[in-house]
Each structure stands twice: as structure tokens, then as C-alpha cells.
Image 1: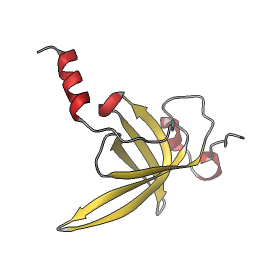
Image 2 (image 1 turned 180 degrees about the horizontal axis):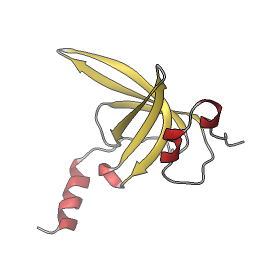
Image 3 (image 1 turned 135 degrees about the horizontal axis):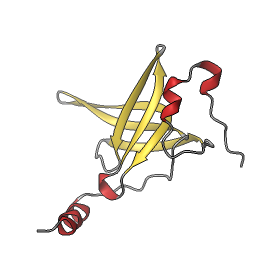
Image 4 (image 1 turned 180 degrees about the vertical axis):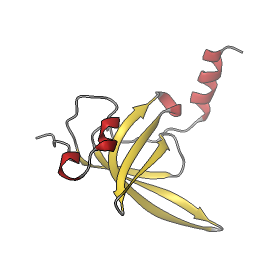
Length: 117
């Protein structure tokens, strides 16, 4: 079995949801399910998209937020069944596809220009 055949099988079996188009620099809110024992609840994670990696069902994206003066990053798989919805709050203007320099910035320097509509 070749690599292309294996990728085709994975793409056919994994169910993809329709998600909005977002890129690095956008501020989004990801609502995802958390299982605690037999209970389920929804939790929101709002932050700036640092990067999108890959394509198809194996793609991932990284979101960064500041929580209690500490930077928190979370990597979400695009095809995760736990992602309930993704909402775009702001469309940012950045010149890079991966904005890792954003990790070093604090306060007013950590602002991203907002795209005018």
C-alpha cells in the first residue's frame, strides 16, 4: 500500500465539518466539547491564530491567548469531532503565515492590525 493510497483512505473515512475560512493573525473563538466522566460540557477558547499546518483532514491550527498574564497555546485538529463551532471575531492583517514572533510581544506591542471592510 503506497502513501497516496493510505492518505486517500484516511480522507474518505474522516468526516470534515464546514468551518469558516481563517488564517494566521485572525482572532477566533473555538467552542469545543469536554468530557468529564459521563458528563459533557462546552468550553470556549478565544485567541489569535498563530499558524495553520497541513491540508485535508490531518490539518491543525494553533491558537494563543493570554490567561492570567501567562500565554496559553492550544493546537486543534481541523477534523476533530470535539470542535463544535469556530467563530471569527476579528480579521487580522499580518505578513507571515506563522506568527511565532507574537509570543515575545507584550502589552500594546502585541496588537494586530484589523482588516478594514
